[in-house]
Image 1 (tube, rainbow, N blue to C red):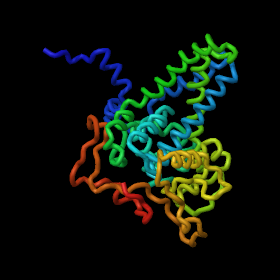
Image 2 (image 1 turned 90 degrees about the vertical axis):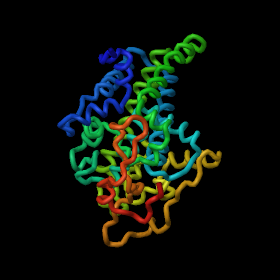
Image 3 (image 1 turned 60 degrees about the horizontal axis):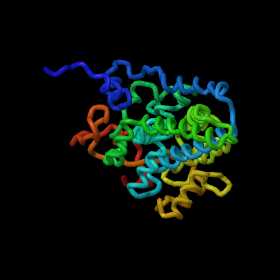
Image 4 (image 1 turned 135 degrees about the vertical axis):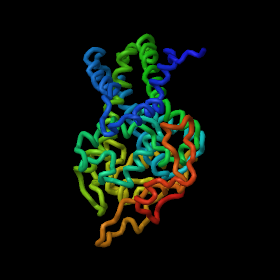
Amino acid sequence: MENATPSFFSKAVSWFDTHEQAKLETGHPDQEKWIFPFPFVLMSVSTLAVFIVGFSWFALGVAGFLYFIRMFGITGVYHRYLSHKTYKTSRWFQFALVLLGNSAAQRGPLWWAAHHRHHHRFSDSPEDTHSPSQKGFWDAHWLWWSRRKNVATRTELVPDLAKFPELVFLDRFDSIVPLVMGALLIPIGMLLHRYFPALGTNGLQLFVWGFVVSTVVLFHGVATINSLSHVYGSRRFKTTDTSRNNFLLAIITLGEGWHNNHHHYCNSTRQGFFWWEIDITYYMLKGLEKLGLVWDLKPVPERMLQPQPKEVVRPHEVVPVPALARVRIAGVPGIAGMVPGLTSPLATQANRSPDVPNP
């Protein structure tokens, strides 16, 4: 008779399996209740270890580099590519880019893109999952992603991404890449300590600064766009949400701070619409375009830069919702299946835009 008791191995695997976790949470009666974010709190408290491991300019430089390159993984890949499809690339380089985004430890690529597309359709309305005007600053900044209703990956919003098994795998086991990256810093630091002692670093120091500190600061940097950029800054364009442009946040997030521009027209690769609006993510994507690794970067139409009419302009939708809705990935092993005849409520609630790209 087969033993129904799960083995230690299966329990360990399920801890890393976000889809198994989602199955448990979707059955809870209180979907608004938030789960204590133990890994995030542990990581945040672990930043205090800098007082134990000490400081070196090299470790600080590694932390800065990993902040910068992984910020690009979120802004240039998770956001402008997966969520908005503002440029194209090959399948192999798509995987390489998503690996970079995944290393930022901000959950899986499908999960991230799905929630962001939902945010654009319902920005600052009661349906918005992270709006400071609805549930307050801290909820928009970080508590929202710990609510039970937000644990599952909403594959009905990302059918164009769910067709790639490799992306589904990274979404399902989204902690593997950042943990491997962090673990690799320890032996690298040990080797540097032995063969290049003048750098003043070691394995533990490089791990704490390069992974722990860098990851926590990176998270809050990205989160400012959900919270601060809907509270502080200027509004060039009339939108139905509270999005604002903020120069400081644009520097911190490599260009995402031009948030009012983005909500006015989200289908452009560039978010700094004018030459004086610094958009480092866009400059990096232009560099990749020159190397032939990405192409078809979408410009800002001239008409979108013109003075607005008196009526309020709605934020543009990201991708059209398909007539055939997908089942949430929490209930389907592997790639989500299609349910004929089931139309997503988003298809009727969302306001269509003539500038919506084809999926």
